[in-house]
Amino acid sequence: MAALGRVGGDMVSGVYHSPIVKLNENHGRLLIYAFVWHLYHPITDPTITIDLKSLISTFTVTSDENLSILYVGDAIGRRTTILEQPTNSSLDIREQYLEPDQRFKEGDVFNKIHKGGYFPGVVRVKRVERKVAHQGKEVATSDRVKTRLALLDKGTQFQEVKTFRQMLMIMYDVLEMVRMLHRKRQIVHRDLSSGNILF
Image (tube, rainbow, N blue to C red; front, side, top):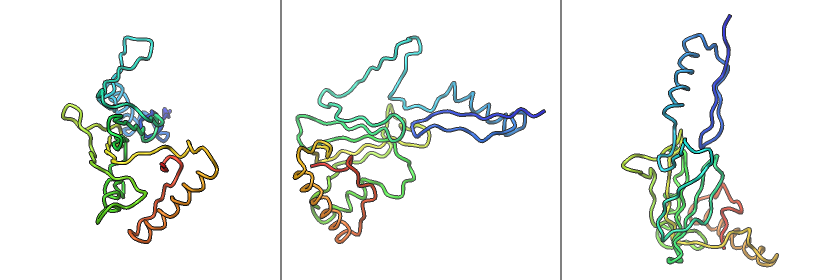
């Protein structure tokens, strides 16, 4: 009788499981071997470590004293983290885990938008690091690679709007910026959400 089963796990980009396979056949055995191998050699971000001797979850965060954490996203997905430098009113750093084969690279799109001069309403990028290195190694988890953008502009999140009138004014500016992006640069913003609107 064939033993049937599936293997599952979670990674930064989501929770996965294999299709049901016959575990006593070649593909099934290879799947189990790979699963056990990854138990001892997990796909992890080398900048994050765990103390296996402790029963209590604790975190040791080492950061530049000139930076503070402004925002941390969900643990599953892009894990967006935004850092700010309080002494520099115009610099934010955004780190994310992105798919390496994305059709559009965000830093390149920002540079295209501002080519030929400042384009009002769109943040400017000072620097892009696509495969952030840690001790000489690329930082990647599963199929996503750590990416860092140094942004020259920052603002207040849209969720912090105080009045209905202010919200309408901001939305008018956003719609005008989107219209001009399409008209002048032939770019359409496909992810216009409250998390992407600053004022």
